[in-house]
Length: 203
Image (tube, rainbow, N blue to C red; front, side, top):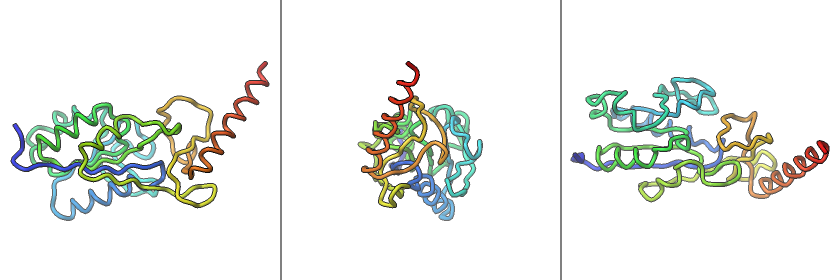
């Protein structure tokens, strides 16, 4: 049954270290201050800073539910408690395969305000998870930028510092850095050159 009032979906995207989680937390804390009932969700894959909290890179925390998928949330939270929720925050949204389905249901049918933060691209600048799939159903989309670690200009991309190839490699400044287009392209060239040298040494 559809809710009597319509929900909303707000999306924060950008590279790592762009302040996505900070923006999400700021919005959620504002909702709490305004007396709204709030629940924060994140992927159980992400345990970098805390298991039961969403934590920004600068250490701001908010208690959360760590889940393997989003559609299980209503049952785990309890149907009655879920009915009373006004706002649902989702951090590291790229790790949820059922993101689109959940956002549609929560906003369209259940009348919830859903605030989502996630990477729009992986380290190869390809679409990451289902984050981009929710742009057509979002009320607002905010693309955040970081500062390029190489030159200080605006950074739109995430450069991986290691040679590992899997898309999901969870880490922070130890594995990734935000870079501008120039240093992203140069960084990839350096990475490829390094790989070629290492492979030629194996022969």
